[in-house]
Length: 111
Image (cartoon, rainbow, N blue to C red):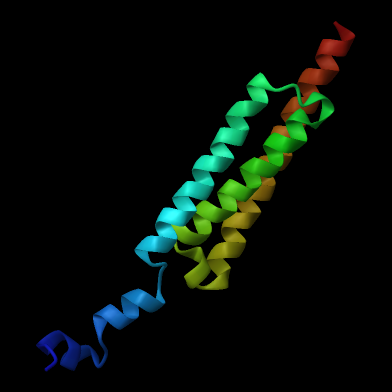
């Protein structure tokens, strides 16, 4: 027997919720992946990565950003326009950060 809401909207809200997001088990797995990536980020402080230090942090940052916005912000299940907006923001943030780092390196070498 369906409820009045289901009859009014013409669909089951539970089915809609399932198709528009990850399951609880998937969220736990994603949280564990994010925790592991964070542990790797923290380990870069204690382990000498040499010249791979910054590229490693950049890659980890990008992977974590994509995972968080895809699943926890539901962009994976929404209109692609929203994804393009978020990824454009990510690219702009990376470019600004690289520019800032290049500026610091430039001034440190001259001084």
